[in-house]
Amino acid sequence: MPTQSHRKPTLGNAIKSVSIIPLKVQKNKLGFTVDISTITPQFLVCSYPVTKYPRLLYRNNLEDLVTHLTLHYGANAWKIYNFKVEHNFGDYTDEELLNLYNKVEFANRLTPPIDSMNNNNNNHNNNNNNNNNQSLISNDNGPMNELERLSNILLRESWLDHSPPPFLLLEFIVDDMNKHLQKDKGNVILAHCKMGKGRSGTVCIAFMMKYLFCPLSESREIFMCGRFKPGVSRGVTIYSQLRILKYHEQFLKFNSLQQEEILDEMRQCKIRLHWIKLINPLKIFFSQPYSVSIKFQEYNEKRDGLNIIEALETDRSLLDKQDQQEILLYLHEIILNTDIRLEFGIKNSKSKKKLKDGLAPTISSSHCWLNLFWETVNGIKDAEMLMTEGQGLIKHPEVEGKFFCHSMNWKELDGTIGSTNKGLCLFESMELCWKVL
Image 1 (cartoon, rainbow, N blue to C red):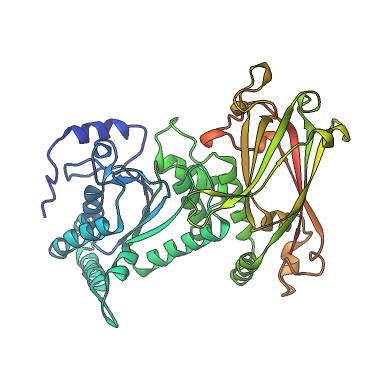
Image 2: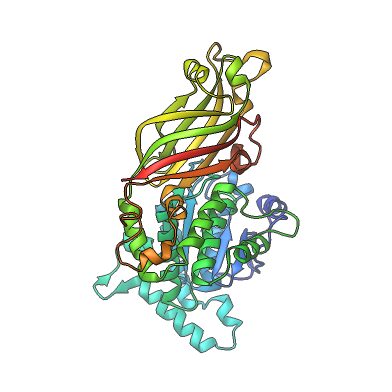
């Protein structure tokens, strides 16, 4: 397989060269342009690779990406982690990736990785590479089937853009990444979502916190500086994604045995919501035909959409009985998993198209993701001490059957498409109350 001139100059390469200007990407001598950023020597991030035009003009070419990874690191050194759930024309399939891998894997047996040729320990690295190649071909039980081969080079665990993953999924992903890296010191992982920013950055930061022992703030800085050129982006900034990283930071304060107990508890944990309170709400809700719309949501099974568990609106008769300083809404015994999404909007009962006084229904849109297991832990005094008693956290006598509350200011909510733009401020803060079942 040629290594010096894999691709002749093309319009697509020229466009991609312009599109990746804001990014810090690896350089190669193979004659093609790939968007791959080195966050750490073993952790790479890229934008989504594709297989068809017109996206090939400005996205990573999957074949170029596989060739680059194989020639630089070795056929069985890399593993791709795909966090993009939205489907677009030109997205690569499992079969396409495996076919490309099979195509370059044979050639790589004859040609050592470029990185190993530039290393003083050629013999040692080449032996490792040969072992890597053989390990994908067979195992102790004989030749690998296609699913086994695919699982060695790809993990698809995706979720909605501009959102955090469920906490249990985040821990599963970073643990799987570590398992791959522990197989051989030359192994690398490549994470991508759509742009290689929010979702990839969240996982990358969590990985550095857990396995490189970096503080949250330092991990954010490493990702930002490794992925983007100075002044281009602040990296991971969406409040809900930062919130799950703070939960992850709490999780890492416990020892490994306690962490396993916590994850087991979380898998079984169910939450019953009781009420939500809006503090210092917008005054027009008490004098005009406007209402606050609140939706309680969870990821659907594929995590490509949301299930609405309950939708509430402030009722006119209810507001007439309440102080204008707050709106208290009781919930209908809603039972949820630990990861929930709250969405807030504004409605007019007399109009489906446009609100009175020129206010459009989209004049205000905000939401947040919460993990109520960790918000429960935040309400437990000396949580780490309770864990040492071997009774777990949620079922401990000091916790079971008690009400817990979480308050959040309007400014802490997420806006539209990952921004802080929420539009009209509907209330100063909100308070949510629940019990753990």
